[in-house]
Length: 268
Ligand SMILES: NC(=O)c1ccc[n+]([C@@H]2O[C@H](COP(=O)([O-])OP(=O)(O)OC[C@H]3O[C@@H](n4cnc5c(N)ncnc54)[C@H](O)[C@@H]3O)[C@@H](O)[C@H]2O)c1
Ligand SMILES: O=C(O)C1=N[C@H](C(=O)O)CCC1
Image (cartoon, rainbow, N blue to C red; front, side, top):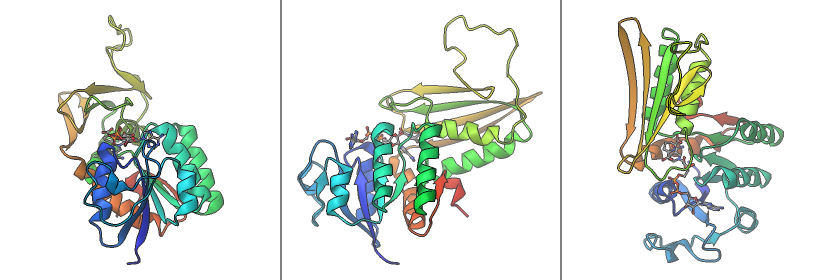
């Protein structure tokens, strides 16, 4: 397999630092630059925790400046939705294929990226969750939703997460909605005596977000019916759980010329 030249945006993050390890430890991947808003002009090896990186990986604070200086095949973005959108659009402008793990994009953001990919006939993969087990959880939930209309999603994450609900919960709800007979769940006259008690509402389904130290990334999809419930749950105990999915996405995006939202769309 030809070497895939990769830029990572957000290298010092919880996810970005794991992605640096993935790229460094994958023979046919080459980390050629990093985008980090704090350390423009430095080498990644100058930053704490990256001393083991012996080859030169320049750090740029702006993606465009980075893309004008290095020739990459793929951008891995693990930042925030605001800057992640700018990163992905700029990468496409420079014919670099984005693999985006950042969550919190709007439907409009995703439609705009898809439009650009179609125009440029370039691959882009956005996945709110790269853990294979989480993908299976979403697919199993979509299967169950054909038989169980009543469902609630409980997602649980570390207390430093910025967005709620999680991108995984929204994606799960979207996949369920595609097959579920729409209904408003619970008693028609139910009343929240404390605002927010019933959680977020998505197409008649409730989504609940738990944020606590000690958690990484967990989700439970609870289906209810007469005399029974069905629980489908996935737990990520370490961010290494997301790396095999990122590796698959990078290897796939270089061969694709279209927009993909959700890792389930590229898994066999
Ligand atoms: N798809 C998945 O499998 C998956 C898994 C975990 C987290 N995530 C998502 O990845 C994102 C990052 O999560 P995290 O826990 O690593 O967060 P984090 O806060 O640890 O890391 C975010 C990184 O983005 C960088 N950043 C912020 N603004 C920037 C800017 N303007 N320019 C360049 N870099 C900038 C920060 O320096 C930081 O290193 C979140 O959206 C999260 O939901 C996705
Ligand atoms: O740690 C996070 O933040 C995670 N974000 C993704 C989401 O929003 O679904 C994936 C799980 C971990």
